[in-house]
Length: 96
Image (cartoon, rainbow, N blue to C red; front, side, top):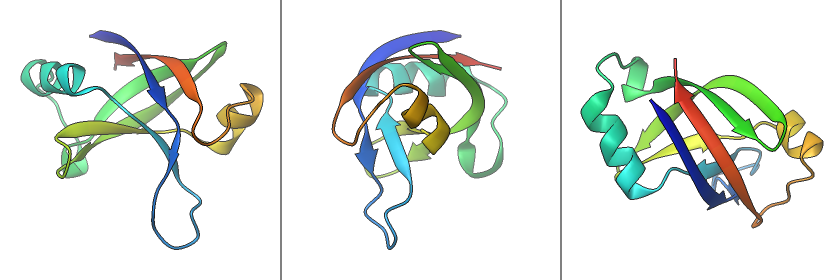
């Protein structure tokens, strides 16, 4: 399954604030929940993600508070795409 959306980069509110995420929109998250049968630990789903010209393999994780999935965006991707906290980015994810 392929999903394309735009979302803002945000910082996990925990200690150290090292983790950055984008939120998969609610409608796309619901579709993923209905269509993806093979889920990993904690209900995560393996995906290939792409922002700009940078792609990487990772997992998206369910967020029980919002009912959406969260996509972690590692530092090397943020640097390559010059993406700062609070900025929006066009994102493509494909389930693996």
